Structure formats: C-alpha cells, structure tokens
Image (cartoon, rainbow, N blue to C red):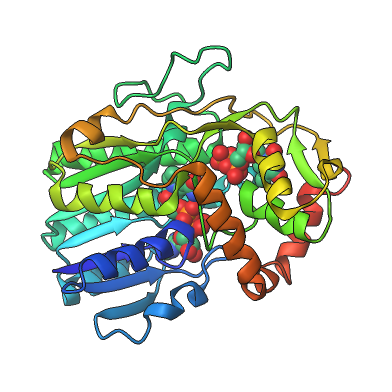
Length: 339
Ligand code: NAD
Ligand code: TYD
C-alpha cells in the first residue's frame, strides 16, 4: 500500500512515521511537510535511508501541487497530521490556522476524492469539545459530546472535522476521524508545556505556569496515539469517529513538580504568570468506543512515559538547543517577557 502522511516532520507525525514503518515495513511511505517552524526534517533522520521512505516538502494548501502529487502516486491511504497546532499562537493570530487547518484539509480531501483514495484519516483533537468543569470528575468527552470550541485553534480543528463529515455524507469520501487528548514524548516543539518546562528547568530558568496551574489535561504517550491511528486506518470502520485518551488526568502544577523532581531541580522555579485567554479548564476522554471496537488501550503508564520523555530531551540536548536557537528566542520573549 502507498501511504501519504502529512505533517510528518512535526511531533506526532514523526513519531507515527517511526511507529508505522516499523510495524508495516512492507508499505510505501510518503512523508509530506511544509517544514514550518514546528516541522524539523531532522526528526526523520532515522528513516531517510529506507527505500520505502520518501520525503516531500509541500504545503497541504497548494492546490496544483497536491493534485499533481495525487495524480502521480495514487495513494491508498492519506493521514492528515498537518496543522498549525499551538493555542497561544492561534490567540495571537488566527489567520494561518484557518488557512492551513480548514482550507488545507479541504484541499487534501478534494484530491483524495478525485484520485480514489481508499481511506482519508483526519487527526483531530479533544479540544473540539471545549472544556469540562474542574469539580466534576464524573464527566468525560464521548464521541456524542457537542462541539463547543474555545480557541481559534480548536475552532479551526472543529471546522475541519465538520468538513470531513460533509465530504463523507455529500461526496461519499471514505474517511475517519480521531480526537485525541494531549500527547507527550520525543520531538515535541518546546512551545508546548512539557518540553518547554523541561528545557527551562535544565537551564534553571523559571517555569511559567498560567493562572494558578489547576487546569487539567489528559496526557497520552505519543506511541499510544500512533497505535490508535494505525488501528483506525487499517481496521476501523469507514465513516467512524473515535476519541483517544487514557484516563491520565494531571493538573499543570502536578506536571511541573514531577518534571522538577525528575531533574533534581527546586520547586522554587515554579512561577505563576498571567493566564491564557479563554483557557480551557479540563479535558478528559472516554475511550470506550475505540477500546470496545478495536481493542485499543494505552500501554505506557504516565510514570514511565514521563521519565522516558525527560531522558530523551536530556540525551538529545543538541536537538533541543538547535530548535530553541534563532526565532524561538523572539517567540519566547513575545509570549513570556513581562507576562
Ligand atoms: P506540530 O505542530 O508538532 O506539527 C505539525 C506539522 O505540520 C509540522 O511539521 C508542520 O511543519 C506541518 N505543517 C504545518 N502547516 C503545514 C502545511 N500547510 N502543509 C504541510 N505541512 C504543514 O503538531 P503535532 O503536535 O504533531 O500535531 C499533529 C496533529 O495532531 C495536528 O493536526 C494536531 O491538531 C493533532 N493533535 C495534537 C495533539 C497534541 O497533543 N500535540 C493532540 C491531539 C491532536
Ligand atoms: P499546551 O502544551 O499548550 O497544550 P494545550 O493548551 O493545547 O492543551 O498546554 C498544556 C497546558 O499547560 C495548558 O493548560 C496550558 C498550560 N501551559 C502553561 O501553564 N504554561 C506554558 O508556558 C504553556 C505553554 C502551557
């Protein structure tokens, strides 16, 4: 089979590439990425010598380029990870989120329809469901929960999901959607919470915690997400939507303390800063559908996954140093100085 993976040089896309090429070495893989600030070709270094690996630097919104690529390669499966993904950047400037996440998705689906792709998979997020209150441990997001977005990022991802559903119903696109909770693991760009605080802690710099640090996220090790997507595209029913998450809720302050302890650093580094606008309180997934239908369960316990993740960033400090040089410094100053 020929598989196109977009956003393959980003955090989850690159981890998925390693997972999938190891699990199904008989298939042919086309990794496509625009290589924005978040995409890093070095993330795929370990795959570039494989004969069944091909890299394409391209924008998913490039109508002619995508059409020509699909005409030439006739993909069996398309998995769309490509997106603008950082909530804080979407608050500062939503426009690119609308262009990439909505129009880019439509462009890929047009080509998928025209050239008879057998499965189009949209990688979505639990953030489309908005948030849950903090005091209600009994409430979870199910596939039936209403779309109720908070940030321009989540609104753009929800818009893309709605378009996928429209293409399924109106044009018969054979598609599926997964909505996953927060991922952690290697190769995550350090604008996101976990790699950002690991990077700051290793330099004894303050860890910026928004508001009072009570917000809850449902953390999933990235390989568990890869396994879920692999199962959905190969065994999941066409037209299906699956929530993916592992009942692993932690407050931000808990995460910060775990990271500091693991690195042997003082909790005095914890610094409360102005809250994010519209900050979602709690995300929590009910994964019963994917567990029942596809037998998926998270394999990595948080205590092990976070140790493995911290070790990866420390062992790969050159990777971390490279991605925080240059433009990242301006980003950090813009977002955090005087906050
Ligand atoms: P990321 O920001 O690390 O990677 C996104 C990748 O997409 C980058 O390599 C970037 O260069 C590429 N890209 C951006 N615009 C592009 C364009 N126009 N054309 C081609 N490539 C483009 O993000 P991530 O965390 O790996 O997220 C991947 C997907 O998973 C996203 O769709 C995101 O919404 C979804 N998701 C992420 C999480 C999470 O916790 N990180 C959770 C659930 C869902
Ligand atoms: P993030 O990694 O941006 O993921 P998302 O907002 O998409 O869930 O943030 C995770 C949580 O950490 C979220 O509640 C916001 C919080 N946060 C901080 O407290 N400080 C930070 O510097 C960042 C980036 C996030």
